Structures are given as C-alpha cells and as structure tokens.
Image 1 (cartoon, rainbow, N blue to C red):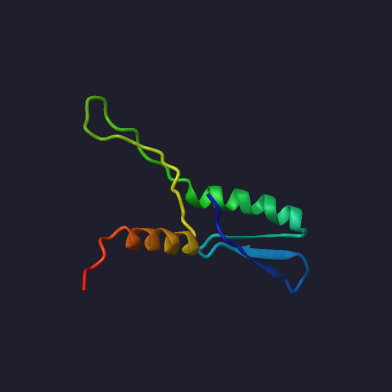
Image 2 (cartoon, one colour):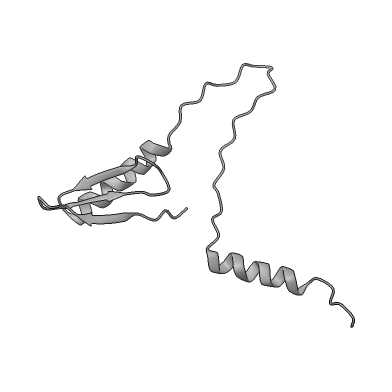
Length: 91
C-alpha cells in the first residue's frame, strides 16, 4: 500500500509531515531520515486498532486484508476497456 504524505520544512528547522488520508496523522523529524522513520511509526500507530478476540463458537471473524489502491489513470483505463466491451449500437 502506498500513502501520499505532505512534507513541510519547519520554521525552527527540520521537517514535519502530515498524511491527508489519515486525519490527525502527523509527525516531525530533524532530518529527512528521521522524518521517514517517524512517518512509518506514526502511520502504523494511526492504523493500529485493538479488536477484542471473538468468543469461541461465535459467528464473528476477524480478517486482515491488504487493500488494492488503483491510480486514477488506471481506473480510467479500466473504465475505457469496460466501455469498449459493450455492444455497439446499429444505426
């Protein structure tokens, strides 16, 4: 999964970054390397959710999935392919 991050230069030096797709997810670092380490940790922390284990014999399940994110260009190409597969009208 790729997530877009907006990196800013901090007025007092160093950098800070925010993750628009995850409200409230932001971090800082004195160097770009430190910022990147902190970003990975911040994103993991923002996405981590504690879920109570389901009761034995219950109907609930916990699944972990890795979402596939399509780029806008790829989605448009797929839509175009879908449109071409529709039968053409006879005039």
